[in-house]
Amino acid sequence: FGPLLAMLTQATEIVNEKALKEKDPKLVPIGTGPYRFVEWVKDDHVTLERWDKYFRPGRPYIDRIIFHAPADDTVRLTGLQTGRFNWIQTVPPQRIPELERGRDPKASPGRPYLPFFLMLNASKPPFSDRRLRQAIAWAIDRAEIVKLVYFGSHVPTAEPTPEPSPWATGVNAHKGGPDVARAKQLLSEAGAGGGLTLTYLVKSQVPVLVKTGEILREQLKKVGITLDVQPMESGQYFESLVGKKFDIAGAWWSVTVDPDMFYSPLQHSTSPWNFSGFKSEEADRRIDAFRFTTNPAARKKMYPDLVRWFQEEGSLIVFSNEIQRYWMKPNVYGSVPLPSLELRFEESWIG
Image (tube, rainbow, N blue to C red; front, side, top):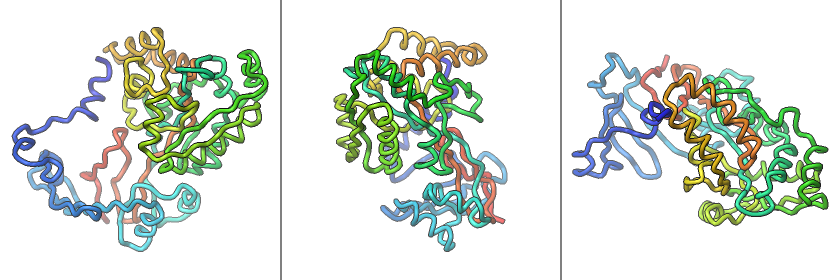
């Protein structure tokens, strides 16, 4: 099983059976980490304190951490700027260029760990026709989407694991795009030269993906496609995904320590997360071969072909990766994003 180590580090924790049976682990968590649980005040904060019996001598450096979870990016940033918080996870994307020019707050190194993509409903027309899926892939302008929607918080990319991931391939089957003429040609070949009207499904709770749909609408207009952007509450959104009641859906995925974590759930025909409805024996064969090859060098050699093959099928179109970085006061050190997206503070310290 090729991604075994990645799975063990991310999704397969060892739990204490006795602790699970005796008390609610959500309220009385048991573990072996650098901090011990002190209290959880619902809708306010979680408090952790340094655990003296942690297996790494001298770690962690910080004695006490209090986590707050304001829902609004602006509230978080204001809290950091006023000194209420020492560290925050995200800031409003449009503020990033301004913040990068200053020294307080400072940012950790950025890592593109969250792929954003379009799901094309391949289970029924029009996107059961590969040519129409490819027309969309040639029509989109990734750089424009990132510039107008995500500012400095994303990088345009065609693959789920771009640099500096060890799995980065640089493969882009649509290099040189957008190519309006090629997109129009594919539409014409598929009998849609007179134009198409499509729906774009998106969670209203993710405003950047709503804005992505608005920019995409203008881009597709250039090739004769009318796009109806339909923001929905989370429950309706997933109901429509499961019921295949959409043409295009905006989405993002987390945790791509190993590329199998992206392709197996989202593109294998047996997966309940295959919302695009793309089913292909060849796709399953390629995913299974990559998944069940255990030699790391062999997996890395076959991976670029896997990336290109799925790009050329086009039921998922990756357009960017969100850059994970943390923002903190100038005297906070040792906080960097991890590929697993876990928050770890055992190496962090305050000067």
